[in-house]
Image 1 (cartoon, one colour):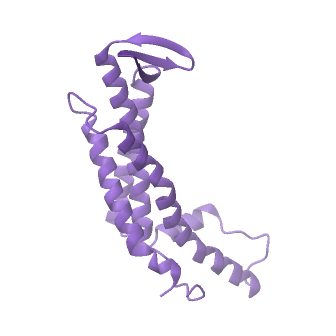
Image 2 (cartoon, rainbow, N blue to C red):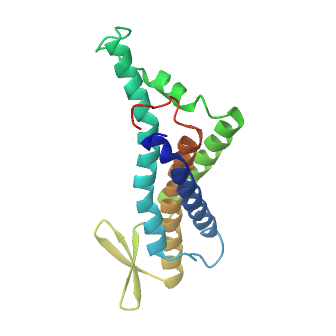
Image 3 (tube, rainbow, N blue to C red):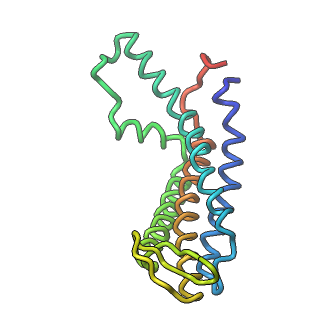
Length: 188
């Protein structure tokens, strides 16, 4: 079993667990009295996206790049002939069943809309709390706000970060579950 293949199952489970936590966090921001999840937990989930997503897609892309290199060495492809983006996307998504691709696509679009609506329709500025008073900091312009507005701003920010993280965890889980596309025997 190759090193890349050994990363498959743990990456899938970590992505599913973290994605579920991020999704639940995003959903709870729509409930009255939100936010329910501490900002530190949301920040941790957001930071975890980078190594998990990176591991999933590195594992997926490395065999494709090796195949491209082998084709060049065999004379089937010249150095200036790169794999087109559409062809690469098709190869990456080919092993994913059609229903799963549709479900993943719909979920990612909904999460993207949730994040964007929070950013554009939310209160102006980052929520801040200083000495028992609440403020919205909009690029240096600090405005005092009420506790209710502060909670709404925190929920909006939490929703944006949790939705974005959840979308990337979904993509990482799909890449880990259905890849790699090419058996990589050279990495054993």
